[in-house]
Length: 189
Length: 189
DNA sequence: CTGTAATTTCAGTAAATACTGAAAATTCAG
DNA sequence: CTGAATTTTCAGTATTTACTGAAATTACAG
Image (cartoon, rainbow over all chains, first blue to last red):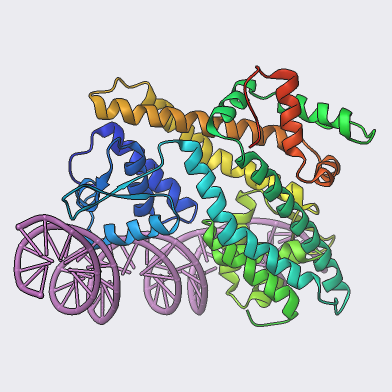
């Protein structure tokens, strides 16, 4: 991290690099992305290389990674060979891409693995128990995925509306419960 | 991974080790946890050591890690020195712990970092733009955190009820919209 | 208490991951 | 087309992360 970044932007870039690394994303790639998100104008590979003080080839690999996640868009300027990169202008769009990509890469394969194990016939009591846990996992993950997909349908504007409702989700769930659900006890603690 | 695991359980353990490593959790620790979750009876460190074919000290460190995440409970048997470990019996409880821990460890510090950067006075147009993006990030993360906290209040039984509703969350949100929201357009796409 | 069974610690090492520089490949302005 | 600008690749290296074995510590049955 050598050149040109103001302390404010540098702090943010460093923090998200750190966060990335805790969530299984290469630290430098995390920094690159933070930089792109915080930058109004698209950046070229050299901009990033210089801003983060890394090698040009590292930048190239990181950008490739970000492209494979579809987190970054490529742009050309007329009459210039150089390529410029930019992040979506809306953070909710970014979140949606992240969720979607992780679903494709990790969640779906996990569900598939679990399903394959669940169709096997348990060889003994241990496997029977294990399968029961796997069934619960599968169910939970599938449910969370469904929820997530519903929520992802929201656009940024409507998300904002929900935001303003603050923590009234509990009420919404209660409402749903009363209108659709069976007559069980409480829905929110 | 040497001894005693049936192919079915081994597949699952390996898969979750892999998943762990993609989400920033040590592969071996992931395997250890899968093993504990799939096991009806509590396991002692030697059981894990043997099942995964790792060193006793590695097991000790992994267990320490799992304890620090509060994902695992320690038990003693009367008249025995040995310590036994078990995972919560309900996968939703596990998910809640994971969410809560990641919030404490990563989300809260991120929100705090963002807030600190947001109270600074931007030094130029670039910083002004960057701050705007940070504001959006903060808002989004905070909102997701709030939602998550609400949903976490659900107990397993009520979660199950929601599950049965399947993907009708869209309807629920629409309902909320009609009942609480302003008269804007659509809520779900 | 004491001895031993068990756990933890940690320095050293192994393995995995990330990064670099140089060379090859690509792209497009001229 | 051509060649200079730019990007990509990749073998080698550096860094980080994970793991081990041996020694130290702890805990408790007797």
